[in-house]
Amino acid sequence: MSDDIETKLSQWSYRQNINWVTKWHNMTNAAYAVFLDKIEDDSEVSETDKVWFKEVLENTMDRKIKNYCLIMHLSNFEEISHLVCDKLEVTIPDSSSLSRFKEGWEKRIGKNIGNVAHWQVLTDAEKIRHCILHASERISFMRNPNEIKRIIKKEQLKTDGHRVIVTGEFLNKVINAIVGMVDTNA
Image (cartoon, rainbow, N blue to C red):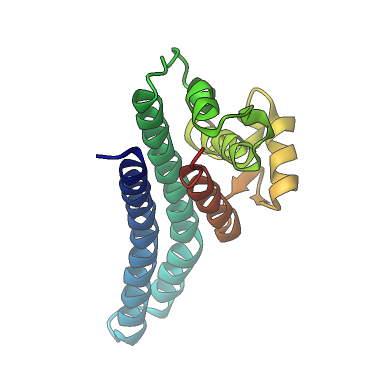
């Protein structure tokens, strides 16, 4: 198989995984909307319970779904990065951050990854993911809360009681950054 065809097939499969995560997000939100509609029409459910269900689904669950999507997209990007490094026969150092894939992406792109805007978006997103996973969204629990605050300001994220809130706009920016990295043909 030619390198060009192999690259295009890889890009297609990477995009499919990105699309599946996005579809999961949309389908989950749609399922919650249907549930809310059924609860609203159910005369056996008290008005108090209806208000509670609506609050939980529209606020808490929407927030959690966005968190899970960010986690899944970044995990998918790590897998893509691993495959890029394998294909280019780049040794992946022991590390738990995206930086372990830096050499592979630099070899693929042909330039210093620090100058690539998509890479910056993804490394910032990784820090937000870390805050979600390891600090239960709580900014003050992070070793470097000022770094998280910088990203929140830069990406126009929201906070709620000292916790970071992932927005749909940020998720789209992360998705576009992953696609931008995948579509790099250098």
